[in-house]
Length: 459
Image 1 (cartoon, one colour):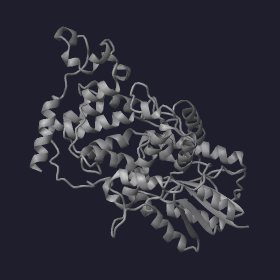
Image 2 (image 1 turned 120 degrees about the horizontal axis):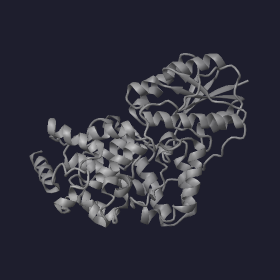
Image 3 (image 1 turned 135 degrees about the vertical axis):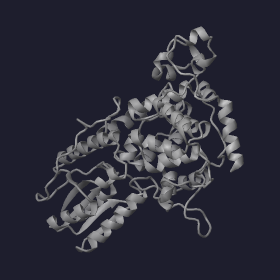
Image 4 (image 1 turned 180 degrees about the vertical axis):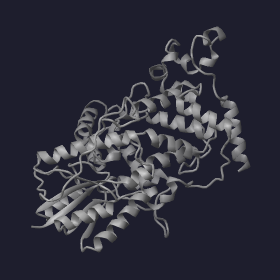
């Protein structure tokens, strides 16, 4: 009786799961394993919203396995050691897992390979599970160039790649009786949760995508920046935890066709683009991709401005609305992410790492590759070819929330201001402004822009 282990990490699904497919095809029994790694929490990655969403995902995965005659085995501890123990308990000959991207994931894989070699077990690592196209499979021409630093040429090459066909979910999973399991975690009792946090799990992810593909995909190109319309897919948490396969999403979107599908596939490619940068440059999770020697503001004034930004009290309604959405949902509209990041890093001139760290404390889709590299893109230290661009929050608000509905939804104290006037409450007559419990802007936009330009000139 041959036994294989499938180590789940950021791929918490049964549909289109290459490691599970390979294990079932080559072994009589399979141990579906997830290890609750204390190192993730020690590294600061285990924010409450993501812990709760993870608990949903694991419970749904266990339920799906039980429907197929199996179960999920959960262990807690250092990953390599826990997997080695399962190998000893089951005499498994191979461990299958998805390739990791981050420096942490790469180090985990190295430790696991070393631990398994000591007990004569093979490690099989599968590419294109977490991403649609594996990092490193698409590289620029020329010696010594190991990744694309510019998105557009990457997108052209990525679009020409032949994606593998998605696998269906298995009909039956036979798990050996021996390995014991810790209790499944639960979101109940998790402290610090955003009250509007979405539900996790493959079942919910597939339901969400099916509904959005039917009702929202066709209009995605025209409406994905409509902040009030909330017309994005909201699939990013499911992609982060791997309850949905990016490969399957691309196939199904392309099968639907149309400009909306093309725009959506482009966003999936952006995700792959950032993953291929991080895979080859793990240090960019904390260091500038393009070092600029920025003289970021520090001191009490900068700290006070940052606190106002975190609380959604900057005096700029669209910025505050987005930050309050983040607090409430653990998620933020993509246009809001761009605006709030530009405001902190360029208008307030505060180190991008401060903002990235705050986002990771709250975002349910807090992905190291996408979060850190999008922050760097906005801050001008990353892959953006126009590092000096500054997004004007008022101009952007009038373009992407023209009637102010998004602002009034999240900044209810301004609900009485009609139309686009809600974006500039400081322009109201003084007697009208007194009626609203809302702060004056923490900085004038022209002053913030002048400070940014002067700092960049000195650099």
